[in-house]
Every structure is written in C-alpha cells, then in structure tokens.
Length: 291
Image (cartoon, rainbow, N blue to C red; front, side, top):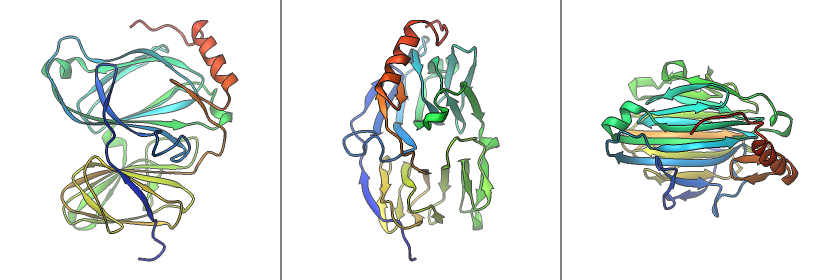
C-alpha cells in the first residue's frame, strides 16, 4: 500500500489523575508529548480507561464549572453519566452514546455518575474530547447534540468482520450524526479478530487513534490497548488489522491555524478574551446552576 501515513509515535497511557471524584483519566493531549496545537482541532483527550467503581448512594462526579470557546464530546463505553447546565439542559449519556456539547459563548455545567449506575457500581470507561472552535464561532450560542448509538452512521465491514460507527464526518459514503464547525472525522471502529480496515485522510489533517479495547496492527506497527497512535502529517492511507476483538477511536481533522490562549475551562485566542471570560463568570453572565 503506497501513500501510507507514517506513525510518529505510540504513546502509553500517562499516569492517571482524578477529575472531580468520578473520572480517573489519562490525559493524552495536550501534554509534554503532544502540544496544544498538534492534534488541532482536537485540543484535549482525557481517557477514563476501564475502572470498577464501588456502589455509592451519593453519585461521584464533577461539580459546577464553566466552559467557553470550545466543544466537549463525551463518548461512553461503559457506565452512565448524568449532566446538567445553566441553560436548563439535562440528560444521561448511556453506554454506546455520545454527548456533543457546544459551550461556545459560555455556560455552567456539571456531570455525575447516573444515579442508578452509582447505586449499583460497576465498570466505567469514557472518553472526553475538547474540540476547538474557530474565532468566528467562539461566541456562538451554546447547544447540545445528544447522539444515541442508533443515530450514528454505520458502515458494516464485509464478512461480518465488524462495524465503523461514524459519530462525525463521513466514512465510505456514510455520514455521521454530529454537526461540526470545521471538517473533522470521529469514528468508533469495532473490529473482530482478523478484520482489515482501510481508511484515507488528507495528509495535512491531524490524525490519531486511541486503542480503547483489544489490540491491532496499524500500518504494520503493533498498537496495544489504552495506547494512542499519533500520525505524521504525511500520506493519506491507514491500514488496520485487528489482532483480537478491538475497539478504536479514530480522530482526524483539519487544523485550526489560530492562536490559542487556554486557562482552565476557557479556550480562547487571546489572554484578554480569557480574562473577559473569567470576569463574565464572576458577573453571573454564564447563568446559575446549583451544585
């Protein structure tokens, strides 16, 4: 296969840290290996690898916090998360589903283990992405896209070898459910042992694959579970052979070539805009949400 995308590095899961008391995450980017623009338009990848939570009456989670200037994308593999915001929106992200939240001009948000899941305890595995917004969209009105598994685009591999769930973008003519502000692709590739999957992305797109489950040979390089495969900005083709039953989160997108000023939950273009966001939160302009 010619015109292959070169693998730049395969990153082992960084040491985990807690976000609130409900999410034990490995932060793959941005960090010392992958900087703030390397995976643009994706700014952050927090991966809650498999962990068993014990039963608890009071749900674990993250209390009230603001967002401005970007989108959060929460992908549930195991477990369930409830969320609420200052615009009166609420819901539950269930296994196999995705919540695509456009914070944009700003809102207050909180997210917790769903009550019944918390009472029973169990296996928990999630991904949260931050997707940057271009400057012209950063102050757009907030919105939600609740994407259930049945709403996703679906491409079935020949021979019953698996499926590609298209969350955003397009794969082999099948479109994803999410509306995006810039061109990007987000897929869950669920492959059976021995399955072969070929994908093409523009050479200048920033592209990476998280091995959520199992293991695979990606462009003839072994990629174990819970590792992140980062590709160079060359070539277009990726070939995957599943070494066992495997789930891969595939990310690829057109970079946003703009300055980044990030402080905590604010992702803007200038520090003056970050300061304005902080002042707006203090002035109550993000609304009210009880913890």
